[in-house]
Length: 433
Image 1 (cartoon, rainbow, N blue to C red):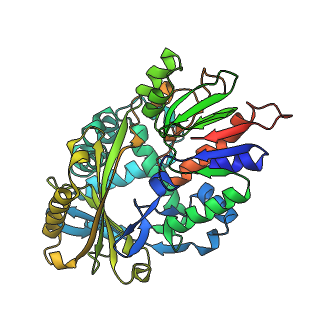
Image 2 (spheres, rainbow, N blue to C red; image 1 turned 90 degrees about the horizontal axis):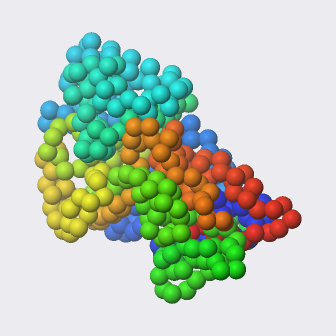
């Protein structure tokens, strides 16, 4: 959406084709019970300058509500708060020396500038060097497994660096406090306003248009065929979906491009949204280091968002990050509800079935890329061997993490490259597919 807006503002004729019935992708909203909110959990950090700039342009930045949040851990079968320095010192799973090394690891990572060197080091090796065996095994590895599963063994140290760097920047901007923000109305409101601005800029928006193939057109340009049999011919096309799907849709790419695109490894997510009668904890996020819990963390949106936005109810997310071929993607909502809610009740014994008002499951097989060793050296090109065809997606975020701010930043960074493909005296027709 940012690409489409910026291209249109530069005088290009742009059509945005979206496969889903609504705009937004991973940031889209849906209805849960009697509320409408984000399908997946999102926050804005004080350091998210690119997103905040876009929200300012949309007239929404001044509406952001900033909240100091708390963090919890479920460890040793009980809840422990780790929201300030004193609680960190009291944190039971690790001793004082281990805590010192953990703090040193975070401080060291926050000061690293040469992230490319970290791409050559397995993340576990780097963490063991800086945090030691005990902290790595009791804190870091459970968190890595929660996010990456068995794929954590493929990840480089750049993964943990990018995560620490973003959160440390947020705390620095927030005067050492964990300040998170949200726009009242959530992404439903942001995306609705974004669509208004796109239309005002002259962008044509077509939803429900799933691409079936993208090829060079006989008379020049790019021919896009859609699943319903319709097609479109444009001068330039930018495909923004996952790299592996791009390889399937674009058969005219050369063998090296196909190899690079198919070499990108994705991690998926099964994310349950729960609407409860009451809150569970004061923590925005509860990290889980105990084994046997079927979800990655507990995200209590109501610890940040005013409960009045949800009619006094509590909105909770239970994410589970998985490889894209995991059988849970085929598991029914009813089975996931039974498994997840049983585990949640074990964590919170006072919780009962009567407290659950709504339960809904989102499944996305390709959410974020696993930053494997030497990842930035294995990226497919953005402008391809097919004249006029560009592939730009979150795989090209090589020194950050998957979040809305870094995605907007990626789009802004690549606009000059895309505009350079079009002679200045011409007005090209662009398709963002």
